[in-house]
Amino acid sequence: MHPTLPVQQEHAEPPESPGGPDGSGGRARLAALDGLRLLAALMVVAYHYVAFGSGAWDGPPAAVFPTAHLPASYGWLGVQLFFLISGFVICMSCWGRGVGRFAASRVTRLFPAYWFSVLAVALVVRLWPSPDETPRARDIAVNLTMLQSPLGVDAVDGVYWTLWVEMRFYLLFALVVAGKGLTYARAVGFCVVWGFAAAVAAAADEPVLDQVLMPENCWYFIAGIAFYLMHRYRPNLVLWLIVAACFLVAQHDLVAAHTRAEGYMGHRVPHWPTAVLLALFFLAVAAVALGRTRRLDHPWLTAAGALTYPLYLIHERVGWLVIRRAAGDVPPAVLLPALLAGMLLTAWLVHRLVERPLAGALRRGLRRAAAEIRAG
Image 1 (cartoon, rainbow, N blue to C red):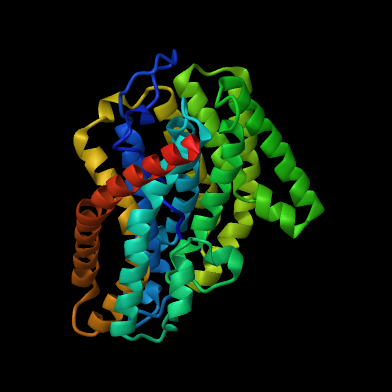
Image 2: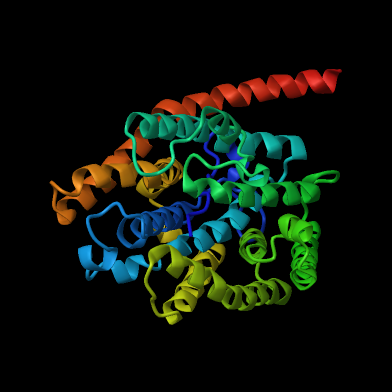
């Protein structure tokens, strides 16, 4: 199991953060969500570096990290936390926006760092050969579109598989934003209809319906939307029932995901911590939604949260290459923290030198194009 896409909160466009529980439209940023995203990213990194059966270390993870490998074995659950946050943040991002602005915000947040990372990882793998297959130029080109998964093209980095999951969620949610825009009633209706449709898709076992409705992953997005509605307005029985239904279905479906993760790791781990961690994720996002985390709104959390997306994009394959090259000469207790520090520094540089300036230029270009299209 590889990580999902860490959803970015907007920095350049002010309507990103919701108002208070009364929906007053305030601009207070939810730094606690940034902290949760950073936690999810670090869980995923720990899973790939300490528990995943990558073959990068000189021995199996359980032998190299006899104590750390067990907790790191549950790091794949950062995927679920990212999806849960995604539902919250995307609903927050497009409130008060038309479908055009919603689409532009997603493009400018996702593609700049992604384009750089695809090219950088491909270059490193070509210059620093490994037992993994070197990506072909034509595959690298397709990866730049983020459509490699549905087109059956090998991903430059294994973690990119979840980009297709996120993109399908964005397309579905765009249907709610289109027309009259996003409202409380339309958001609730979307959650209910999507949940029932996903259950039908699971029963039908039809690949096309599975691709569109995502019956395995939709529950996290739906719960995230419901939590945002609690935050923007106030909790009520309907929203709590939506969240509870999502949790009950998700904890059942995680059995299959847990088994897949064990296959990637090459060792078995107890299942019960999976359900416990999922419950903690739901409780954490609920705490944000109910305003219980305001004391955690520190600027450093926002700065740290900005690193999660570049960290996600670059950490896996490049990190394994570094481990393969250095594991024989550097003790794991030294190599692992040094590698993590290097990846965090690289993520910060990508954010400051690539993501922010390129996103600004892309946003301006999209606005000009949209104005020209509207003008005919």
